[in-house]
Amino acid sequence: MQLTGPEILRRMQDKKNPDIVIEPFDLRCLGSNSYDLHLADTLRVYKHTIPHGMKPAIEYKGSPDLHSMKDWFKNIGYTTDAPYYYKEFLKHPEMYDIRNPRYLVDPTNPKHHETIDIKIPKSGLILSPEIGYLGATVEYTETRNLFPYIDGKSSVGRNFILNHHTAGRGDDGFCGEWTLEIRVLYPTVVYPYMRIGQIYYEKFSGNRMPYDKNPASHYNGQRGPTAAAVVPVDTFLRNAMQKQK
Image 1: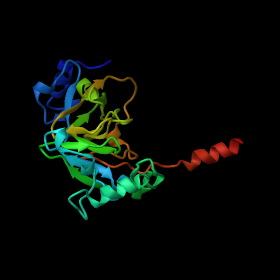
Image 2: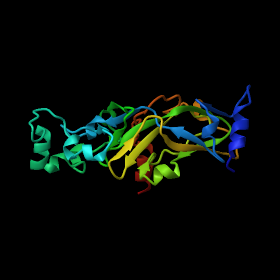
Image 3: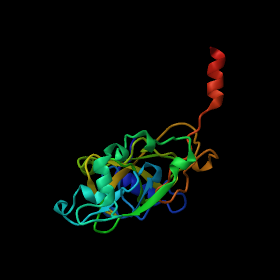
Image 4: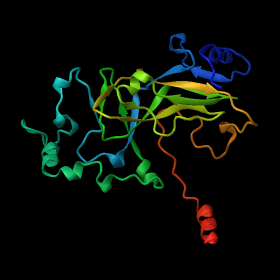
């Protein structure tokens, strides 16, 4: 059963043991059955996935007419005609194609989870459809005795901004800022503090197993965009399956 906006507020107002903490909180962001979340001003990108000489994002100049394809390339060896790397792209587009296996991500390799930070300026930042971005919510939340989850706002979705791939579901006991896995369909401008999603709360049945008490939890207390933990290959399962053959 999903909580209504007034019920979210009521559970936040228990001064001794609130089930819900949202910081910062503003009533103007409370909806009929959710609370609006905002995009923090830092993104992270796996540096292994950025083609050499390309920019992972572009500062927005205020009009699409002021931008061109050349803007995605660094201006090292710049001439009046085009940046050096843009000329290289025109000669060897396959070297800059994100589908090239040289940019693959190995979920079991911690080196592939090394990131670079990108600040989102007030003027806005153009995201590329070719890049995956880790963002974070401005809001820090704590949830107890409830199941929290986030989703995109309808207006965000209608701009074809995906704010999470699979990690929209949280856990009872999760405390932290939410990491967002952001993708866009077109080159798209994002701004710091723009509304990026909504958080919902549902009741559940059964005994609790809080996330913040689970020694196997990876992301409790996270602040800012948080890179993936190494995805394990469970050899115990593989061995069990081999024994059945």
